[in-house]
Image 1 (cartoon, protein in one colour):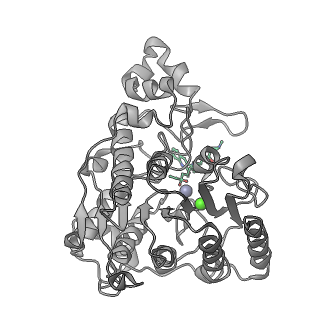
Image 2 (spheres, rainbow, N blue to C red; image 1 turned 30 degrees about the vertical axis):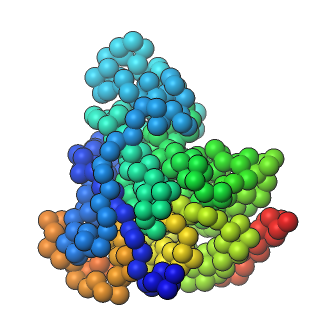
Length: 395
Ligand code: TV1
Ligand code: CA
Ligand code: ZN
């Protein structure tokens, strides 16, 4: 409709559970769920909440999780806690570690503490999965044009295994819900890591196309997502991977890869709904990412997909320099409601302003230019590989 052209208004739903502020992966862990509380405080202080409908903060149920996850894995998540794990009650230790939870021994580089047994693990899983399911429901029933859950986006979790800080895969659950209402669902993943869990679930499903942009160099986690990985069987060419070396900046990422590739995806796949995982670890200065996107560059991906006027689900994901994450997701919330040009660069007082000292108390911080990528030539090859895979999708 005329009111729904690009830059125009959208009906936006926003999910936030304040319980996220108390979720703690443990001292020294890079995943800090409090970044979502910081995002919310910023969104609120910038006055963006009245522009959105607040969703009911209903947690997922055990049967919601069972729509993807295995029964004994769900039972493990429900029953385990730091105490039962430590005391190895009822073989809790073995049962957890076999499924990627707790201290996991690896052949190569010693122990892996990515997915600790944390206090409130079960409630945390139900909360972020519930948010993404509620957001999917708001789109499916036609109540909203855009729905947001910054606590979601946990793309690595498998059917019966935790991986890469992710215990349950809220994205898979949300896409499955969208499939009940929409014929074709597009999944796009701008987290610096490969969206392996989501891709694997839908690798044979022609109604879902998964597209991941990520760092790929043979060692960077999870080491999958090469260009030749294109889906299987009925889902052949419905998985698209755009692997890049460290150092990507706005220019190469957006102009050479994201916009041209996504324009073609929208044309050939013509989705009825889009799910965008907005992992903020692709931003410049991230503690583990190694890319150099600015907040405006990252948000340009959101704006680009929003401009197609297809129901859009925005989810969080990675992001390990937490002030950058909150800046980014707050700005992307403004993009969702069409007010990104109206919010001032000065960070308002909101209780977390001291985190922004290093960025001069500004929303938009300076990107690291000197480590940015200089050779755009290698990117042309990456783009050609992607466009070639996409051309196979044509009937
Ligand atoms: C505890 C304390 C855990 C400090 C984990 C970085 C830590 C990492 C930590 C870390 C860290 C990873 C691997 C290990 C495979 C494993 C939310 C044998 C300083 C979506 C998940 C990355 C990314 C997992 C998740 C990765 C997401 N990197 N400090 N762990 N090896 N794990 O490499 O995509 O962003 O880093
Ligand atoms: Ca990705
Ligand atoms: Zn990531």
